[in-house]
Every structure is written in C-alpha cells, then in structure tokens.
Image (tube, rainbow, N blue to C red; front, side):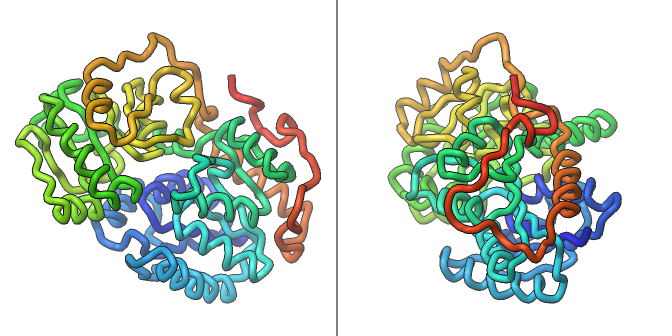
Length: 383
C-alpha cells in the first residue's frame, strides 16, 4: 500500500509513532507534518524521543486563527495528495491538521482512515469537537478506541467500516516502558523531585488558555495547593499566562515542554495529575495515577466511571479540595484495548484495500449499512 499520514500536533506524533512503525514493515508511508506545532520544543523533541522517522514533507504552516491555519493546510495537503495519489490518507485525533487532511482527501476522492474516531464531548464550542465530528463523517474507515466511541458514531448513523481497535497510545506507552526499563530517564533527578513527591500539571486547551478568568482560577489553584507542582508549559499557555498577569509561587516549577519518554516518567512518578489533556487522562489511568481533569466534560468517560478521573472545570475551590482529597478505588479495569492497536489498524487497512477500490471515494451522506461491532473488532469488546 501507498499511504499518506498527516500529523501536526504533539498527540498525533505519539499516535503516529506506533502506526508508522507497523506500516513501514511492508508498506510505503509518506509522513506529512503540517507544522501546526512548528518549533523544536513542540515537535522536534517529540520526533527524536519517539524514534519515528523525520517527516517526509514539512508544510511549515505555523500558527494562526483556526480558519487561516486550516485553509493554509488544506491547499498544501492537496498538493501532496495529488502528487502521491495514496491508497489511504490516515489522520489522527481532532486537530486542525486532522480536519484539513480529511477535507483535502475527500475532495480528491481519496479514502480517509481516522484513528481515534467517535470521541465526543458534546460541546460544540470546542474547536476539537467540530474537527472530530466533520472528520468522522468524511472517513471511510473509523478506528475507535472504545465501545462508547463506536456507539457515538452509531447514534449519528455511522455504522459501516467502524472498527473497535483500542487506543493506539497504549501501544506507544508499552514501547516507552520498555525503553525506560533499558535506559531510565533522568528527568526527576534533573528537576530535583522524588517519586510521588509532586503534582504534575498541564494546561493547553483553548477553553482554558483563551479565557483569562478560567486561566487565572486554575493558576491560583496551582499556587494554593501548598505542594510541589511540576508544570511543563505549552507556549500558548505561557503567552496567555503572561497576558493575564498570572504569578505563581516558587513551589510551582514552570519548565519547557519535554520529550515523550521524559513525560512518561513524570506522569508515572507523580502523586496526582492536573490536566486538560485527553492523552494525559488516559496515561494517568494506565499508570495508576489519580487524575483531576480541568474541564467541564471529558471524552474519556470510562476513566471517570472507573473512579480514577474526576472533573473540576476551572473552579478554584473544587480544584484545590479535589487535589487534596481525591482517592481512587483499589482496582482499575482494563480500558482501551490490549496494546496492539497499530497491528489491528494495519491489518484492517490491508483487508479493506483488497476488497474495495480507492477510487470509490467517501461513503455518501446519510445512514450507512450496519456492521456488527463484534465482526469489526479484532479483539472483541472491552471488559
């Protein structure tokens, strides 16, 4: 197969790491980096740490408003797809890069495979929600991380070519654990913190960084925890914090973004996670670290139902009280697959390519032919 994979933001680099490794065993992949995260701290360090190949194409789009950024990506991605004529265009997650890749491919009648399909926050004010909904309705193959995600698609009339494959981030996490076992990270030593001796915080979503009141409340809560906080700061968050005049006490340690392996070590060694990141909610769960989500809703509802994740929004008092008292149960049910999602996705791409011509293009609008989830899933429903 000839495949074009499109990435542009840190979470997508993580997901692409596992699938690229699997695809390139037998197939040709062109990895396209849109440049949505364009500085070294936000992209290059992640490529290095994950051991994936450098992008074959770097579009260099950079930052901008949602419309201008997506529009710039759309034209440049289209040029790549016209030149490559791939059998599949693979997109990940819910960023502007995801939407632009799906739109460009669909308009050229090239089939789209969406990794991490079916997630819903049901909050249309989130740009990520718009991106994921539109991408799902343009996609020919939909790779779902959970039964809940597949049910969301079914509720929207999408039941054909829906595959319950698990979460590809677990593939990468298992790989990272092996790497760290062979060569431990030095990030805790470098920061002068001890295992379970700090809270790890991340804030990057626009609902928090673009709202000065929400951002200020979260920053005050970090300062009022009264314990060591390690806070890798997203460039957008740092700029917003400066604009809002946020001042943090010395026990809140602001650091630059770190590579994936260092971030895994910081996550698994923390006493508690405070975050608005979807990926970190899952990784906290897999590591058995309690998570407080700084949002009013989450797509990863299974972690909340299991008792290891709780929502506080940006409410200062709720954040502080929850961080001090939150105690998850003693057990954690297995969630989001078996850690072999990349192999499952690759197998389904191969099988679908043999059964259908790429020139068939996207499915027409409207309800799709039903396909049993048990038939679609390579490992069955999660327990």
